[in-house]
Image (cartoon, rainbow, N blue to C red; front, side, top):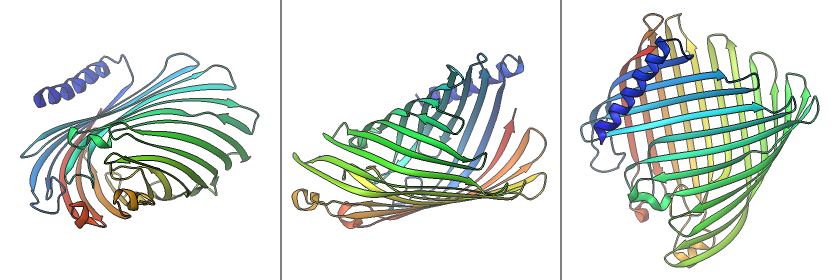
Length: 387
């Protein structure tokens, strides 16, 4: 089966290359082959296993105007990774179809497939997952300054069988009014969104209603910023050990971002957010997530480029009345992910890469949960081919 998955990835790359060679479709193809070292393959606190690994990443992109009113964009990334103990294949796909019904009405249909590995506080270890999101967004231009959209989506989250209690279905529907305050510089928006969360393998559900106001502003070609604030009202029906507990609460919502591009070869980004969302562990009905992300990219020369990414996420799980009825206590998790990557361009099509990455996760109440803090360091060298 693993050999079959590798064969599929290679076949996709060869097929896309054949199409491009015949100039039938405007494809772009990037293949990156990496050889690396991982000092904690399974992201555990005890019996850490280190291993060399090989990863092949095939990226395909395609965009076409199907008619003067209809556009199709397709992007994909197929990742095959092999180390001493296992082989994994992670497909990631994104397709978006837009159709202009009239000068005022635009319809957008998209589908996004994400797959990778993750850790969970419910069961120690590293596990694979696949998420699929189908979205539909009709937008209507009310005037030269105002527009209205009604985004809807259905998301399916599936995990390995050993953590299938975290499988989740989410249906979301909302309404967004956007107004241009200053031409090409300032936009404001009001958002209302309701999400129904169904934890399909643990007889639990959560209803999350978000109301927020947002503003986006371009100060000048170098500086851009956005800010959104509001709140969520949450109603949960949580089941554990045959006991059902219902609760409701209100939580703040905040999202802010800043982009600074001092020159055409340098770019900095910073984002912060705080929001209540569906739980990523079967022990709780929801979580309050606070995240900080930083990014920097700089072209040192015409051939050498460097990129830095850093993120910090704190997840807080409030047991509320669950603690008395189900014996569950409040707890929190912290996750840090820092990576640096350099690229040296040999010629128009070929580049060499060097990457270093550090991850760590810290658990509160880990003695009760049976999981421990872990750290992971990775380093790799790669060859990147662009067609």
